[in-house]
Length: 297
Figure (cartoon, rainbow, N blue to C red):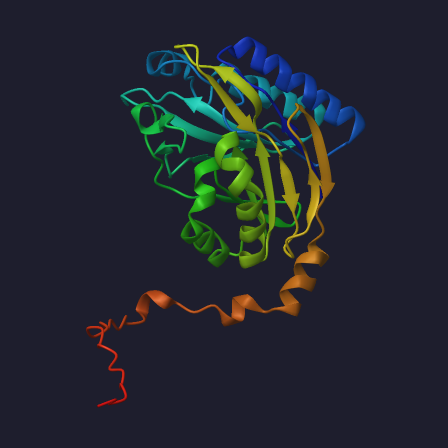
């Protein structure tokens, strides 16, 4: 199966973002002829205040981003894993960060709402508080496409190995991770975590990120890491972007899954460690070391 990732530099401007996404998806279809297109997190809207994000959130289905992607999938006969959309749900005071997946007929396969929310203070003092705007999801999603079982995750989810362990237990072959990793964390952790998840759970990792920067309402620039990549289950990088928008493609092969899983049969060896008791022990006090001295009297 051929996958084309669309790396974007989105901003708080939905018309611009959707036009750029469509332009690069069209380029992918014309030049790469992929079976699946993957978009990054927040491809429809990035940045803005809490009020602006809430106002920008749209319906799933029925919103502008949803309709554009659905039409494109149907018109061009290509499946699309639509990164994540700011989803508004009537009756909820917060929005959701939601992946939407379409088949090559434009039919919606399913949705996944991000479960781990990015509430941190970075080493440079920048505060990220996703939960002020976004509510966490409470359901996981694996869908089937062209013989692969594809599991959904989004950005900060990457740091939580128990999520991937759960998805691997459901026979996931591919993890798709739309993201908007910061440059500050990405340069140390992005490649390490992407390759580690592929290796430890013997699956392909498709990590499609935002790049460039966007301006916060107070004028602060926030920089995104880019470096979208596809890793195979041995941890080899099949394709890697840098820090500019574009289309980045690779083929994934089920034979590679079978080969790696036969070399190291981790599924057969994996244990349910939750049932193991944990013994605890405490070291005793440090003993004084007695040094014999020679009597010189």
